[in-house]
Length: 205
Image (tube, rainbow, N blue to C red; front, side, top):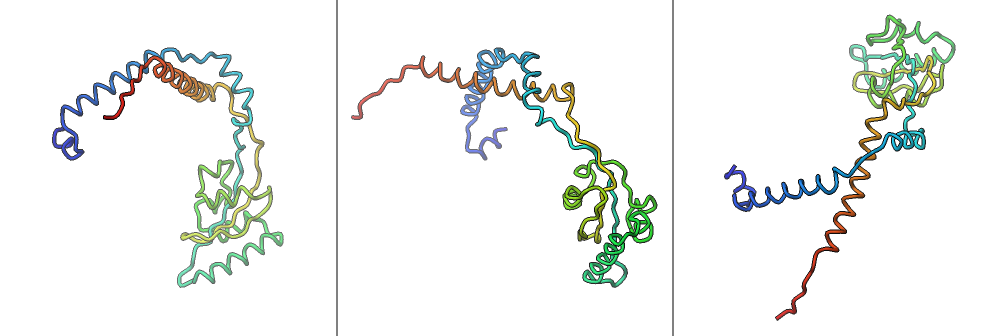
């Protein structure tokens, strides 16, 4: 401990004094601020009702994915060209799932590239999730090139957005309101200390 304090340019006595001051401050904060902060259930319900839009959760998406991995000796340009050809084939009417079974190099190829209902932001890398987010149901997006290969994505279906139930949002709302109230009370407490403190000014010699 002493060697660590020395590296920080702090003596043991100074460190002990600082620690004592911090403990006193924490105790006073608990006594004059935290113990007076109470969040009523009615406040939590009112916040939830007033800010309902903030608790909207995007519905799951049924995503389709094709990974075109580079073949032996295939250049990036050639792979990009192959991706454009496959995309054109699908957009011309070929079934996405059939093409995925034939062309895709990823784990869901046997299911026709169908990942089922998922939250893309949790399952896919960002560029794939972003590309999927911009698609309408049944639409196939532009190729997305990565170090793994080129991806083609579609949105088979999507479910409506839902609102997080109050029970699930309760703890977060309570914590937020408690923090807001604590900050407000702390500011008022500090102001009261300033008013009670006498400051004396002495003329310069």
